[in-house]
Each structure stands twice: as C-alpha cells, then as structure tokens.
Image (cartoon, rainbow, N blue to C red; front, side, top):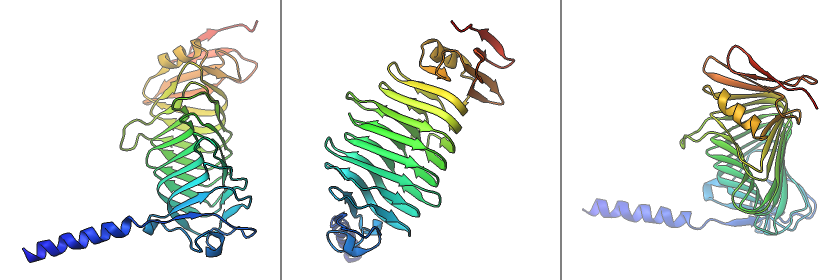
Length: 299
C-alpha cells in the first residue's frame, strides 16, 4: 500500500513540473540566431522538453534557425504585427502547433528553405490574423491539418518545392469573411488521412488554390461554392474512381484548367484518378478510363 501511494506522489510531482512551461518572446535588436539565449526576453531558448512557447510580436528583426530548435508551440505575429520573418534552415520540432498571424491584429511570415523542416501537430497560416508561409524547399510533417486562412483570418501560402505530409490541407477554413490563397509550382504533397481518416485537399468558400506544378496525392478533393481550384501544371492524384465527381466540379465552375472551364483531364487507372490541365490551346475534358471526351469550342 505504501509503494502505491509513493507512485501517485511521484506522478503528481511530474505533472506539476509540466505546468511550469514558459512563454518566450523574441526580443533581439540585431542578432538573428534562434539558439542565442540573449535574443529572447527571458534570456533563455525555448525547449520542447519543457513545453515552452515561442512568441513573435513587435520585433522587426528576422529570426533564423540554422541548428535544431524546438518548442511546444510557435506563434508568429501573436496578436500584434511581427515585421521580421522566421526563417527555417534546419529542423523545428513542435509538440502542438505553429500559428502564423494569430488573433485579429496579428500578422507574421515564415520562410522554409531546403534543409529545413517543421514537425508539428498542425499549422495555421492566417489564424484569425494575416499570415504568409513561403516554402522554397525542406519538409513539413503534421499530425493533422495545414490550414491556410482560418477562423476569419487571411492566409497566403506559396510552395516552390519540398514535401508536405499531413492528414488534410484546407484553404480558407472556418467562419468569417476572408480570401486565402495557396499556390504550388513544385514539390510533393501527401494527404494520407492520418488517424482521423479525413485526408483531403479542401478549398472552401473564399479559398483560391492554384496547382501550377508538382504533385498532390490526396484521398479526396472538396471544393465548395465561393472557392476555386485552377490547374495549369502539375498533377492531382485522388483515391478511387472519382471521375464523375470531378466532372461535377468542372460543371459547377469550381475546378478549372488554365483558368478555363473544361480544360481538365481526369482519368481512372489502377485504383486512382489522375487530374491534370489540358495543354493550351485545347479545350478538352477527358472523363474516365478510356478517354471519354467532351469538347467545347472557345467562344
């Protein structure tokens, strides 16, 4: 009986230590190194092992990660404008979330380069505020979602390379009046459903997505009225035979190729539907295995 009681006391003590997490605010006046303690207001570097938080608010100085870094969560532009940029050239491991442009008055920017990585629960770009995520390379690995524009915020994401692995990706997520954009010119996105089984590339109302290159592998595709997905290059690969659903999106004007209705090719083979744009100046919509064609002349 004594031993059982002792175990309970030890567990409670460890829990109490976990509750003492610290919030660090970027306060550098010139140096850009994340891992320099004097660049933070509490003269220490955030650590995931202590469940620390990293906040970026009114500073105008960039923060650069050139060596492994970690925290429980990162908020870039937390309720205020952060006029610098968080530049990630090495690994950033987060226990919970990265929010870029958090709360109504918040704005901020993050740049991910080759050799850098973000491992997190989820990412919100424009989480009630205004956020920008530029991905030049590297990798993003998430437990759940990448949200570009959420809860009334305005998010912008430009992907020029690298890889993203997540449960789902949502452009313009949540209630509010906003316009959020996602543009992809190269790289690979894999939306695998994760533990939630809801892997999808979703463009909701007021969302604007452009696939200009690269590959998106997703369990499914959702585009709601008010949103649009335009494909000019690259490939969208969806699970199962969804050629009829693709046709419905084209008819509704929610899926376009080269900015034009019906400039979309969708074919089913080996368990997957592959969606691409028809090279200009053709105006051809291919639907289903075997290439059923619907032609439409330009007016």
